[in-house]
Image 1 (cartoon, rainbow, N blue to C red):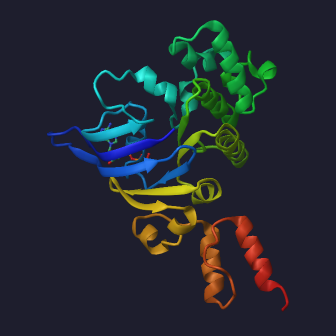
Image 2: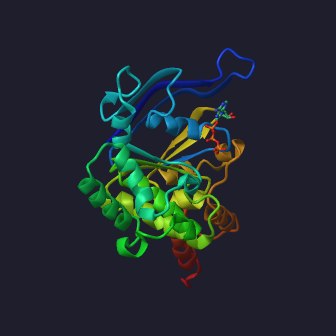
Image 3: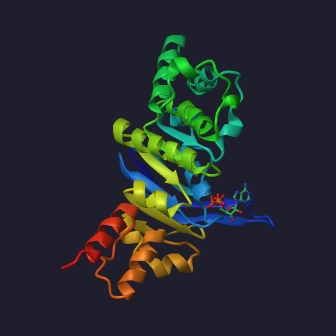
Length: 284
Ligand SMILES: Nc1ncnc2c1ncn2[C@@H]1O[C@H](COP(=O)(O)OP(=O)(O)OP(=O)(O)O)[C@@H](O)[C@H]1O
């Protein structure tokens, strides 16, 4: 399922002394099945943009077309949009409130008005999809889980609504390395195996390089760069000028090249760096 954004402008508190143009004429199209990373320094407009995709925020002007339908038009129901577009907020575990994991995950599908049988099927399926074994976890309290597991419960709650588009706002923020890896693995799996169009807001260039097939860079409410990770991370100067970095291994590659090593230019992952360094060090 695709999303098309046309001339999107969002102004917070218009015509007040606190007026803030958060999105300044955004145009973009996210195609079915893409894995898009949205990056940008704090306050660049990422959260504001994604909240338009599921109708949480209304544009000041412009349109959002989901699956060929303009969701900003009058009469479009929020529940219809939520069936298609699932949004996992930053620190979603703060929104877990039921006494068992099963009940928590059921909350979203219940709000869609589904019957008990369907809710039960979807809950089980969503738990398995995020790697939480149903029988083992269903009766546990969300509060006895690790940070990474709590995030998985929160993601399952959105996945249980079976959206075609999954949006995650910094899903690894505040997790330890193990929790981060768990979540990234599940996100990758949801995209690959279940073919969900995925939009990931992230501050980690390493995660973006590893997972995304497209990177959109936001700066001051505008799209500054948009392309494949290898293309975008070549623009070291532009990224640095807007307060962003490239993956650490890209800098390493640059340094080695400057020192005369024969290292190719578009290294963005540890695996690529390892391969290139081994090749450069091999006796001729
Ligand atoms: N509810 C609001 N009322 C007024 N201004 C807001 C509101 N939400 C966001 N803003 C402003 O809009 C701009 C964009 O904010 P937004 O949260 O979309 O940025 P972001 O890129 O998601 O930042 P972060 O990486 O910190 O989450 C910022 O200047 C922010 O201060």
